[in-house]
Image 1 (spheres, helix red, strand yellow):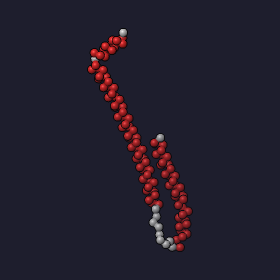
Image 2: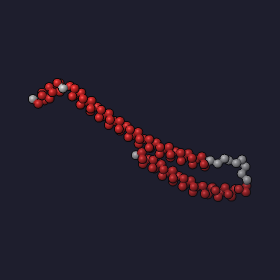
Image 3: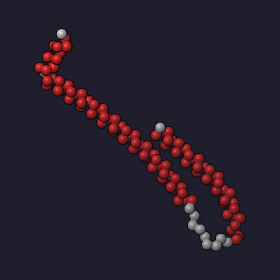
Length: 110
């Protein structure tokens, strides 16, 4: 009996039903908009960190490139050996910094 009364009330008051349905749809659209905006901000932050990481990596790679000399003089040979021994320590430090930056970005993503 109560169901029949509710159905009759809904049939007689379609404007109220339409307003309620519109309100529900509006609420759902607002939730979607908020989620999309929030996700977009998070993705933007992650992309900025990735860009910063690649800038650091690419900037370090360009600094390491040294133009080759056609004929290296023989008296500079011992100096080159000393520089070659120091280079792995610098590379290890650079690789460690790159790894830390990459892990920071990955932790932000996941």
